[in-house]
Length: 257
Image 1 (cartoon, rainbow, N blue to C red):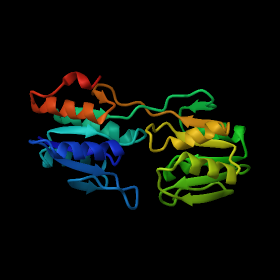
Image 2 (image 1 turned 60 degrees about the horizontal axis):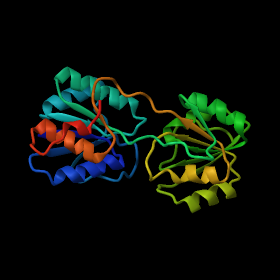
Image 3 (image 1 turned 90 degrees about the vertical axis):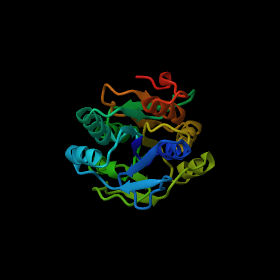
Image 4 (image 1 turned 180 degrees about the vertical axis):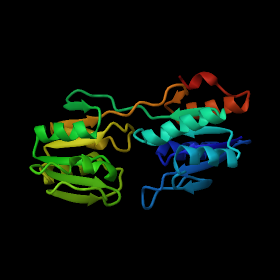
């Protein structure tokens, strides 16, 4: 079975490793190419966009893909929508692999918002020194805010318009709780803005904010397209693929709908 594995997430890399040891699977991992020096998964990798829905549909048909696993970032809504539409058009089985969002804990001061525009308005009301950990592509939503000062952390330099008062911190995680506590203290951060990406690798900033009683503006995930099953672990995704291949070791109940 030839599978297109979408995404550069940790879960996508782990699934690529897992499937490499399974007979009968041929994996093509696809990365968007938005990070200058991405961590590559094992096996065959393509980097770059498909040229929209039509391009994805053409690529799938031309490369004999038999199933799609959408393991993109939880906020890659456009790619997930294109994957669902293309799978439906071509009659291909599709699975969304998504890690769970972060659960609120005692002491958290979270304000959930639906999008970055709402996050900008909420953050400006909460404080004057705002820490943005939303990726480089979303900082333009804060460019109109002239009063607050922003610490903008990203892997690559932002290309969008920036708020006039800011500092760029280029760094790649994961970061420890001690590192995040030190950063919040040294920069006198009084608001954290982040996306509900989930996962242990980027959770330290939330722990640090909790310990320092810093409010967090948390952007909710966009909804997944309806219809396809969703798995929240790599093991469940593997079981789904085994079921698609007709393996007697499969467990179709591991992926919920």
